[in-house]
Each structure stands twice: as structure tokens, then as C-alpha cells.
Length: 105
Image 1 (cartoon, rainbow, N blue to C red):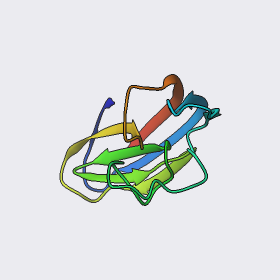
Image 2 (cartoon, one colour; image 1 turned 135 degrees about the horizontal axis):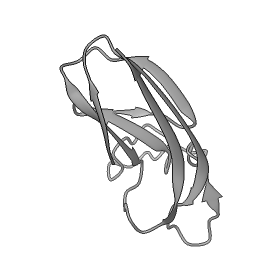
Image 3 (cartoon, rainbow, N blue to C red; image 1 turned 30 degrees about the vertical axis):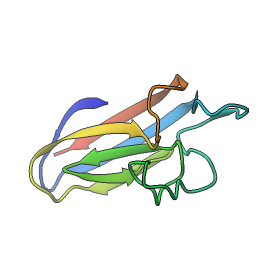
């Protein structure tokens, strides 16, 4: 998801998230932005080392685990911030997360 937040080196990025989604996996319940308790551990997921069905951010070409919240100092080239779920089949689930993004220049 495009956030319309343009990051520049030296920016502090603060993201918080709540609410729940259904990942689209049969016989499972809903999960929050922290995702499932297990890591994806599958190359079909954008960030295999992060929890499956968790909230991720992407700047440049690098994904970060966000979960319920993260704060980080951005040090790369100017780029837009994107959000997505760590999902191997995006679009097959339902629900929405409430996400707040603050960029401090």
C-alpha cells in the first residue's frame, strides 16, 4: 500500500498499528498486525524471516517487520514508504488494519 510518505535520509519514522485481519487461510481465525506466532520461513513471502501475515513496511527495496509498532531512523536515498502484509497470496483474506504513520524531518 502506497502511503504517500516520502522519506529522506535522517528522517525518523514512527508506525503504529491495531485492529485485525483474516489471512485467507482456511480454519484459522483473525490476527492483529503482529501476525501469526511463527515466522513465514517460505520464499513466497516478501520477508520470510518475519512473522507470517504480519504488517511490513518497505523503503527502497528492503522490508521491515512492523507488527504493532516500530520507530526507526531512515538512512537511505529518498524514497516513498509502502506498507503490506507478509502474505504469500495477497488479496485472498479480509479485514483491515488501522495504521498511523508519522515522519519527523
